[in-house]
Image 1 (cartoon, rainbow, N blue to C red):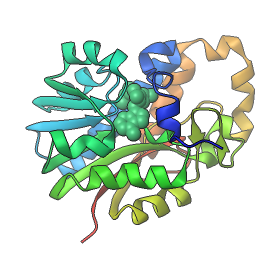
Image 2 (image 1 turned 180 degrees about the vertical axis):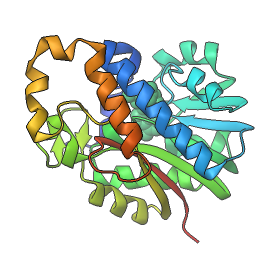
Image 3 (image 1 turned 120 degrees about the horizontal axis):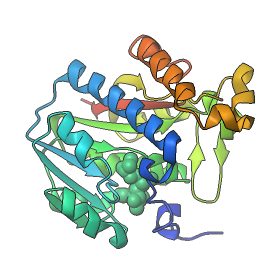
Length: 245
Ligand SMILES: C[S@@+](CC[C@H](N)C(=O)[O-])C[C@H]1O[C@@H](n2cnc3c(N)ncnc32)[C@H](O)[C@@H]1O
């Protein structure tokens, strides 16, 4: 029986970013950036500042600039990544989401890419979302990524829990958002894993297909066709939310 939340126990083990995953990481980053572009086009948030919760080494600094954000700030509880983050971001602090309000308040937009996947406990996931929600300005947005168990290969298409990461169904994620005092405004697909569909599982075992960019390009294009129209069959979804009124 653990007494500490998983993200405390696993601190330092979950700060990898797309840059650590070769061609697959390049694919994921391109798709997430495309999804974020749709968020900024649909919601037109103020671009003066974005708060990156769980910023790790500042892996998204370039992306935030490409999306037009002027001031890039963030927090991450892992002290080992903050030096790199401070080299590419305007202001960073070693902190958990529970301490976000000590540094940044009245936030117009907060982002949490790839963080909820590392919180194994239901109550801690809700607390994480609520802690960020409480720092939002009245119309402020929280945009965060969640994996979709229905189309995620490693999940066996059901909720799945590993030693430091997990995959839940979108129904569970929607319940968590509601419990955290969030109203979901939109759900936008990020990437479609090339091997997430049962009929395409063979791609995962074919090293030639898995290691060539053309395989991924097909799924970048498919994601661009589906994104904004359907969240099926996306392996990851951006939830766009604001505080419930
Ligand atoms: C996989 S990295 C994601 C990095 C970056 N956002 C990206 O998408 O490339 C997850 C980061 O979330 C941080 N994290 C975990 N629990 C957190 C919490 N409760 N509050 C804030 N950050 C947390 C970890 O320290 C880790 O650096």
